[in-house]
Image (tube, rainbow over all chains, first blue to last red):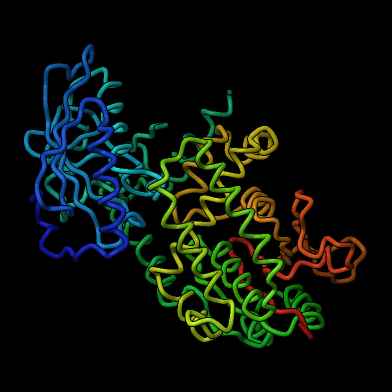
Length: 163
Length: 298
């Protein structure tokens, strides 16, 4: 299910390719703390290892993020999900989908893979309880695409972070 | 501070009217409505063809008499309208087309040099604010390319027809819109003390948060704050003509407009010309949407 959307993906545009190359170089020089990019030759799909921050509910745990870039990145947000097993978190569904506004309506080209990672880590770190979203079963059962949820119940689920 | 809690409550109320349908259908219905609106908008090009002003009156044939009266008044001063897609980027898109069209037709080299200097100031402002160069440089490059290409007599020169085509091509049009969003955001943050009270009044968020959530994401609609800051940052005056149902106290029908005149001193035609206060960009505002207007004899 997690890779169902990959089949219909179009190749990156030239300008998207350019931008991603630059982000990759920047990442190599200055990676966000707690993240490791697993190097492959696929520029359009990044797999990133996340280490839970010390002193939080997720310390000593590692997870994997899968980042897929659309043809017209960065005009459109990348699709970001946790690979199985996803961390137990009130805004992360068991299928790895993440409820985070910057991945949808609040995305802007001023953001980068790196800034998304920092927002996701901040979302993990600020959690006070390890549990699934209340509507997890319903959401996962009805989820028809590989994308993370756009907006649930008028946005009440959506996490806003200031990063 | 107390206001902070008001907004979610309002949102819940709005949702409440649907809740009888059950949460499940709610999400589906909302998503479907969103996609219907998106699809409707997508039928229209980013920038339409130039149409006679009579096409505006035709829209309101069976509508409000006061609007029809106002359109008659507009008809005395304006010859044509060019519509833009209602996708939340219409202000920036209308500004883009109107500005590049003006440069293409006027071949005003002094204006080009002046605006380029302001573009570089915006670039510096973003750097100072801590934006990573890689996030905005492509957008700056693309805009400067368009500006170069409307200058005639070069190998890369483009015709008016080509300008229309580019404005309808997502890979150019959206990049230029995003360029303006960067410039607008930089100007607001650079002068955050000035803009703060307006922003607090609009959204009750910090200046930085406002820029992140209401300026930088594509599709976020523009308000006075956006227009003021873009006009100031680039030093380009903008006239906005308002077409709404409001009637004036004196009984007669008139159409209001507001000129956004940049605060900077290096205005186009600043050398004492009377054109100083005569913006060459005119946008027609109807609640929630901006189109381009063409003055008569212009």
